[in-house]
Image (tube, rainbow, N blue to C red; front, side):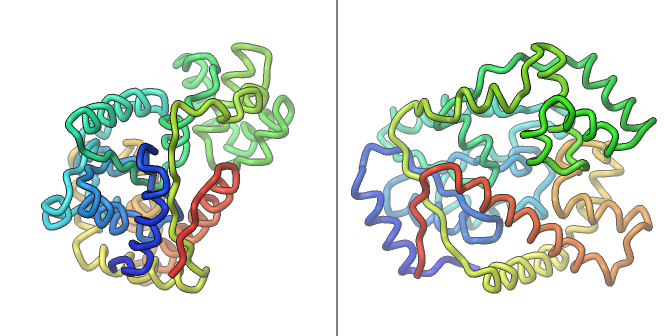
Length: 304
């Protein structure tokens, strides 16, 4: 879909104001992050560091919006398709990997440009993480068993009792994060929201500049609709079918927006004519959540 030249020029002026800052192109899904990051890389002798939690996995290509051959030819990309879909990957590990890549790019005299919509990862890289305890697989497995037996709402209700602040931010269907909140409380006796508030993402590792394109809700919806249709035409359904046949049906990226709906269609739970509207609705909800997350950091918003 491209990005407007006026937006690129405004981004370049913002970057010129702080030439040493680490650039991070963020913003709601479908707003134009990839196109802007590539345009900046071309103008600034830069290389792009992916911060999308689906693009980082191998084989999840069409529905993650991975850069195609033409885009890769315009700008080098890092941390794209580097992790097996069945491998666990959290924000701490991402930050460690991305920090190494950023340092390598800078050492070679290039400009690192972080780009992606997984804002916890971006925050982890730029500001560090709260020092909450490491994961406990035994607790997580117990939570999965509880969900299978009692349902997601019951797990969320337990979180509400011990960490109401976090529970208000999480949907009952977000089992991974609900489980993490309970896990931290069980391990430490302290709510995860307390750990996060204590840190507050205040300890920046260095200067950074977060850029995001501001789109009206109507314009963003139109971009989402066009992108979903293009991906379906490009073979998204067949991609998900192949992933399931390859044993990745239960992989974490399969639970992401869009992939989840295509998998439901292939399982016979969602009619083909209802597929695109369902993906668009879920993507719009996700975009609203992303805008909310961006309210907690300083962002340079770009408008045409």
